[in-house]
Image (cartoon, rainbow, N blue to C red; front, side):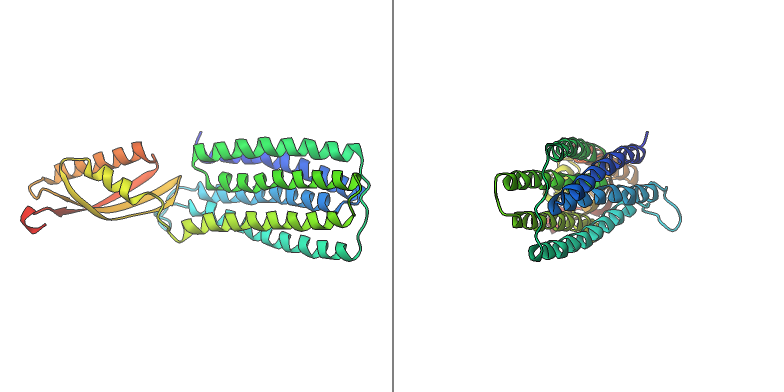
Length: 290
């Protein structure tokens, strides 16, 4: 099974879990009139919505290379993550507006043991989902899973904050604390959106993806290589491209040079990432000119 197929299967499982968590939080939050829990529920709902967007992105990204896309379709995965970030920015703004309205018209949540139990259950679900999703994202080199796990991880801290707030009100804190926590929830959502944009924009603008010095060290470990320069890298963990200039003895044959390049690529893949594709520009090395 390809990594894309594994990612899609995992996203379907997480989608069902996120919608279940969201329904519980929104239902209980509305019932007890808790702005913070309801906001947390809608945040969880965006987790499910983001899974749908990511599923579409993965489906497009898994398409094979064609004449119009000689480098493949992998950046559709990146675009889908940016789309999720945009949704989170919008949702954070809506929650801020609603929270400010609650400052003007505060309400006292009706807190029950059931509502606290729901939050504890969803908290442990989110911990499991975030850990497993991040682990698989690293293992499969999936930017979508890594980004989504960061999004889900913010739910953990948000839910802990809501739990502490509800307990605080139960112990006698003023109702306005609920609106304050809603603003904190919005802050977490906006920060999650920022992280998603930061990580995925780096890929789109071809930020250096690998350590240049390590790439040079590997190339220079071959006796035939006398120098390596103009080293560049770009892409994501699942689709990395590296190009470099190397200087070799001028008497190397075409066949020997070809074998050397493949050996360098194999070693880079073994030591850094198996998805690296290497392009090398060969230059003759003349000792008296260097």
